[in-house]
Length: 327
Image (cartoon, rainbow, N blue to C red; front, side, top):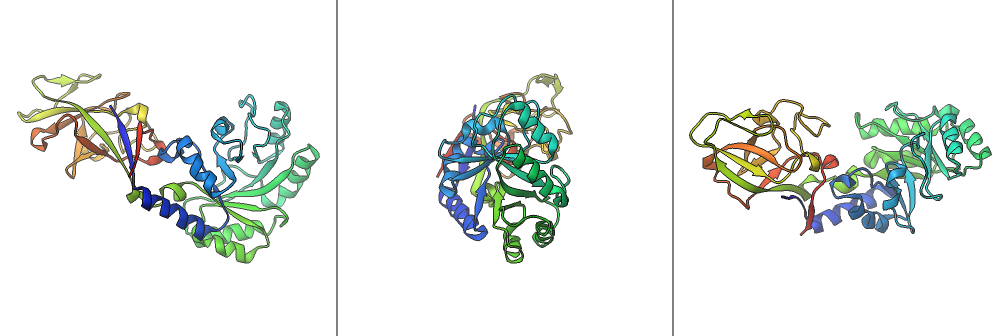
């Protein structure tokens, strides 16, 4: 049973080079599931771009080579326990975050996250100078400002927002930006800050034609019974219906396309929500994916056989392939 990720190697490497060339100074991001590649797979590619690399949380620091300087994007929080590396650059947004670092007994360098129209993390730009003074007084080196812009809106609107925020920030620190595209050059032209483009999804997955997910067919059987699966789901009637078992499931992060952000058994299981395809036809799931297998219910005239591969449509930021094939 295998969920396989296939990558068009030459095209993928060319895309990564083009993104770095167009953005200028880049901070590559390798976090979460490693954008479907796995963090360990992407780390050498990130290291080829920059000595610095951004990870999602302190729990991902073990994947970062000793020769790389990690930037942690999410504030540490009281549940972190410990920070594995004293050279890791941590994110702070408030005096509370400084208190957490004091409680953990760490004096790591920090970046100060500035509130954007996303309104997730960050301190108001007008209050950032005071937080910087407090951080430095507590023994932390402040190495950059950080602004995380939303996905909604245009690159030009993001550039305008970044320029407005930058106007309230001291220019002796670099300004880290995300989700701004080529409009980052507008910000560079409008501010005295050294602007660094933080990028992950666009860097590694900007051209989705370069990557494909497939799962292998493990078993095919004609239906001579009325129900099947964990839930004793009723099999659609018809003399030509077959059950097909494919080798991926919830442990791979595979779920119905209607399950936005979910990984298991939520949502309608009509043809419109199945992520599986073969011969340009969507394959209906009998029931939600099991941990390592998904049961499909298909017409026999599709001629699926053991050993075939079916296409799997899933967001790359939530899947965990078993193997990666670079070709």
